[in-house]
Image (cartoon, rainbow, N blue to C red; front, side):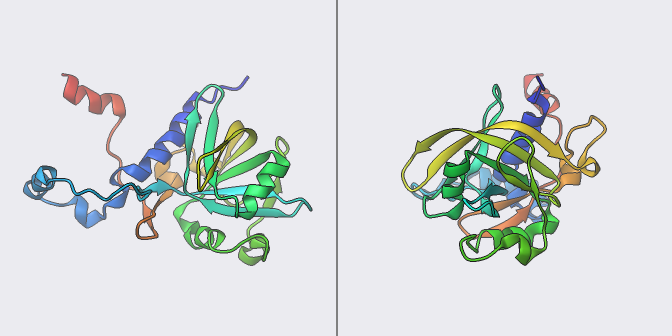
Length: 231
């Protein structure tokens, strides 16, 4: 059985990028120490119970009843388990993809590089009921040989998932998918054989403003950063 521990870690880093320095511009990163201290000392303002946190951007692939490939952009996503390796996506029942996954019991997660920002924005603004999104964008659907779902050939990382569980939450239904395989372009792999975020260049979504942002600069290895506190 394959070990997905390292890949799960990489995907978790991609997910956490949405809650880190990715939301700050290069100019913000050069702020003076005094200004940073002032921000830390500010009294926090309540924003209410709202889903406005920065999140990763994934594209979900599925087949409809007739076998037509479809994709949609989803940001309510993340890693939810290491053994077995699983991801979670949350969708509204009104979406075309919701019915597709319920019918086919499978889906793919396609992680884009920033060069595909306009295609990803389109995938989230049009419905597969009305248009063939692959024909519209010129991207290529590939039939998975492991699950009953398509993935996007041109995207640098794809994750093939079989549906494990669903959970009704309210406005959204959570789909938990077990990872059957992770496929990645060799061009985005590092020397350790794992995805390199600097080469992958994923991006994040800010729900409050409906903006996409690049991820931030390298901050350091987690063990080394932790030692700065523990020493």
